Picture 1 (tube, rainbow, N blue to C red):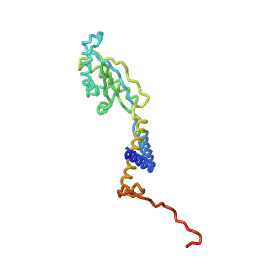
Picture 2 (cartoon, one colour):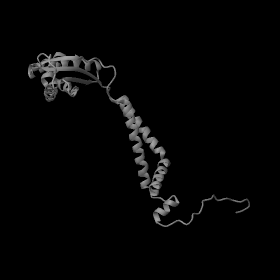
Picture 3 (cartoon, rainbow, N blue to C red):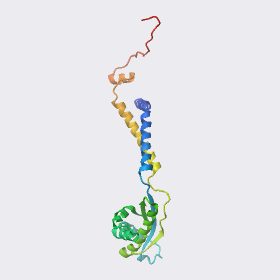
Length: 234
């Protein structure tokens, strides 16, 4: 236990001796993170549409949805995800929005489809640097998907519960979090540099260093005192 305490005290002395390296590394990493977050990365906006899907077997949705229905829907979620991002849906979306055919690939990359467990709700999310376009695209994808899923997969009906609205705040990058990450990385980097310098430094500076290197017990030490000159002495 005593040995562990001594080691800990040595580590604290090492850190205190070169604390400026840790501070400098933290400052540089936070600065770099801030520059990248605020001036390099584009702000991204998220718009989402909430859908409700039910089958013909639900008898026009009048009967309560049972557990087997939810199980079936859970199995179909992956199918719906693929359909929403398919060339069929994105191609129609591009055509109706007046976008070139070459944009279909970009549209597919912007779309994310999710499902809340034990529900028949489907969420279509669109991420883009333009908040207005993100909302427009999300609503159009939901509209086209609603038509195609009935025609191609035999769903009874797809209801749009919530249309996408124009987001007012970016969803990414998370600037405060990036700064915190930069600070943590900077401190870790600084500590690594400090202990690396200490590890590579083999010079003997203290009595403890002499005992550690030679394995001999130090009997005494000669104090260092400044040379003085007396008047009239050559």
